Length: 334
Image (cartoon, rainbow, N blue to C red; front, side, top):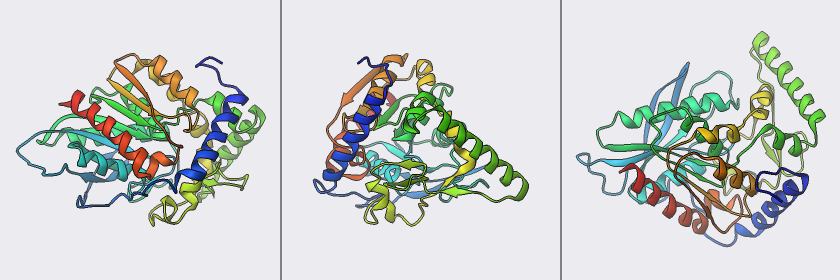
C-alpha cells in the first residue's frame, strides 16, 4: 500500500487501531485538564471576520514582559472549545517557554458568530490568522506559529498556505481530511450526496427562520451523529465530555463545508518549517504520510506511541508530544 492511497482497508485499520488503543489508553497515565498547575490563563478577545474570537492566553513560566518569546495559536478538534485539548497543549507550551493562545473558533464557546456549532474550515483559518495578528502585536513576542490538534492539524495548513505570519507549524494526531476520505467514512458517494442535500435544506431553514438544525457531533453507536466512532474522550464526563462550555452538537447546515474540508490540497503551499507528530494508533496515519510528502518547506514526521484520544489529555503521550513541539517552536520562532 502506498502512502498516497485511500482504501476501505486503510479506513478500517485506522479506526480499528483507534478503538483498540483508546480503550486501554485512558487507564495508562494521568488525565490532564486545561487549567492544571500554577499557570492561570488570561482571557483575551480580538476581531475576526464579521465577529470576534475569545481565547485563553498562557504566558510562559516566569514571564518577563521585557523579554520576547516564541508564540503560537492553538486549535483543537472538530467542535472543540479552548478548555479541552487546545487549552491543555497551550498550558504545556507555556511550561516549556512558549507563549500560547488557545482559541474558541467563531460559532463555538465564548466566541461570537450567529451560526452556532457551524464547522467552516475557511472561517477557522481566518480566526487563526486573527490570533496571529493579536500575538504579533505584543511586544513580548519574537515570532508566531500555529499548533493544531486533530482537525485543527488540517486547519493550520489552510492558514499556513496563505498567511506570512505563520513562522512555523506543528500538528499532533492531525485529522488530514479530503473529500475522497469522507466518502469512505460515510460509505460511498450516494451517502455523501444525501448529507449535502440535508445541509443545503438546513441552511435554507436557517436563512428563512434563523433556526439551527443540529445532530450529535460524536457518538459510539448513534448512526445519525456526525462522527460515529469510539468517542471515549467526548462521552466521558471526567474527560472532554465534562467540559461545561462544550456542546456535543453539529450544525447540519455545515455538511457541505465539512465534506469539502481538504488540507491535503493546501499542503504543497506550506513553506513554513513543519513538525507532524502522529502515531499508527491515531486516525488515518496514511494521511499524515501523504501530508508529509506534499509539504514544500522544512519538515519532520515523528512517529509517537499512543491512541488518537491519548494525545488529547493523557500525560504520557501529551508530554512527549509537547516536548518535541515546544523544541520545534523555540528553534524556529526565536
